[in-house]
Image 1: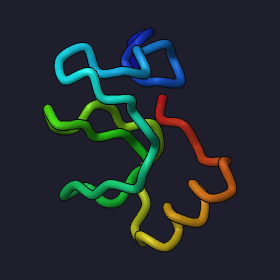
Image 2: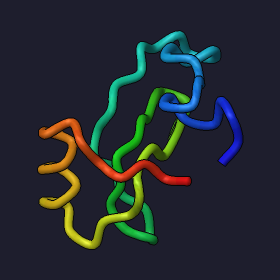
Image 3: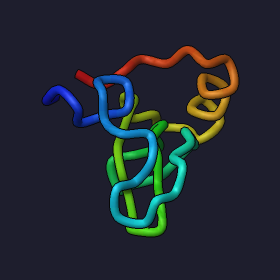
Length: 70
């Protein structure tokens, strides 16, 4: 991961394109569920590892503790 690639590593908290304030949420890709941010432009960043189950990602997001991707 490059510095500034995720919010945790310094990426802006407001999308430079659509000016939306970015908030963490549970998102899905073909690789699985993950904690990340999405804006009007599309996926902005993936902050966590991939989870097999949506419930596990939601539980970690609610706790505010999740394994960051590296």
